[in-house]
Image 1 (tube, one colour):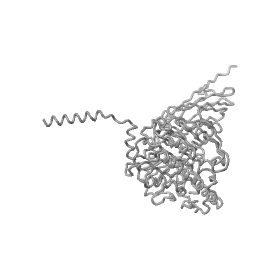
Image 2 (cartoon, helix red, strand yellow; image 1 turned 90 degrees about the vertical axis):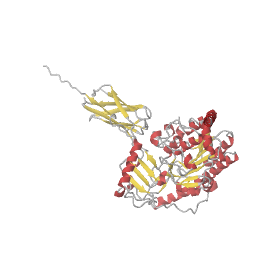
Image 3 (cartoon, one colour; image 1 turned 120 degrees about the vertical axis):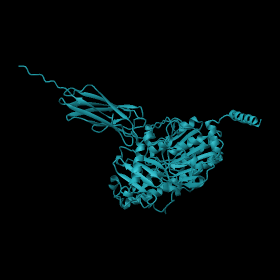
Image 4 (cartoon, helix red, strand yellow; image 1 turned 90 degrees about the horizontal axis):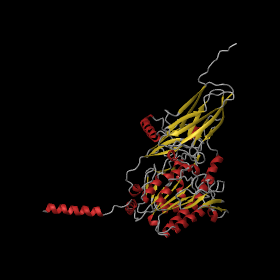
Length: 595
């Protein structure tokens, strides 16, 4: 009798549980958010600066107080590519540059027009019911398509004027929801960071209370000439100069060949760096106040307690570190960035886990309770924010493929908690033990005691490479060429693989006596100087492109026209089908002379 009653009770409990509706994905997210003190999808705020070295955060006391002391400061935050446009494309997609295909700042290898904007953090959150807004810098060379508003954005205030010396700060144009608006003058009221700040605050104040907000706030500062807000003139006159151990590095004999070729900076050049550093600190002051204004607006509208705020930048900036300036390098000065996260319910702390810009989309999607529709290379930080003991990655990939502007500096690198290992396209390699050499002064690639470590890292990099499976074929008007007989050939390149190929080169080998009279490409390709090849910035999976060349010769030719297609490392084409050729005049018939 007791057994039967127990069975009946169990059946009732199961029936009761079955009648409880399972939570939707959004409800699951809300359940998760309650751990952080929220009850609905949070507001997601991304504050992005431009070219900010990680070591300049002491110039931003308000940001450190409002975000750092109330959130997690990641001491090892990195970008996946230390260059503006590739990094910003990664922030919007969560993908490495070798997957989203934007590898440079300017066309044809980069820029806003090159970016596939059909699936981004904005489109994901917009479809999930967020009010989405961008204020400030979008992608480099947006001024070439200034009237374009990418999908997914409900409000759009993007800087649309072309770059000039002053346009980062004064005399600029905003695309304001499709209307081009000029801002002129040299006062604090028309200073770009302040104008953008006021736009962001107005958006926070005007967004309906019941609707979650995604705000992408992106300043030009600290970029270019770093012209200060007039309100800050006279500050930092006694600023201590920037002098890390790597400053104007005296001995670069262990560095790659391209760096060994760089001379030491002269005293006058170093003095210019000191002035740039002071102006950089000045340019960050309005950004610091903008962070305060955004946090205050969130507080005033009742949103702050349920807001996730991420502060970072698109890349670092070398200031004579290792005889370098600007970015696009593997060293900490270029790739390491500020990375602060404030979220509901998390305990303030310093955190030394390896995090990257590609983690931001995955994190925001996780907080919003949505699954990105496309491949995301980054990881969600949500569990790590809640519990620093959560499982996490032990390595990250950093890469530069800015071909052809600085091809010899293109690299892939692995960063771990202890080491930085890099392979350049030139064959140069570097290895640094950051626990004893945080300034990366002593290249350990020749240290035989670390041979096993080097081999392990080299093998790991191969796993990031993969194959693009580029297939090359050719059709021709014939195979006869000679006086009055031109030859037209159309080469077709197809990406049969699952990875984006960036960039792609097609090289020709011509027999002596043949000239190329014209060369044309489809898509965004272009012919090389001398018409001995062609380049394409990107060929996506399943995409095909064509190159048509016309040839001529002063006499009948015999020989072979060869062609080979290759994708720039790390996406190496399959050598089995990336070559083709045409045999010219394969058969010659000699008729006897009859008298």
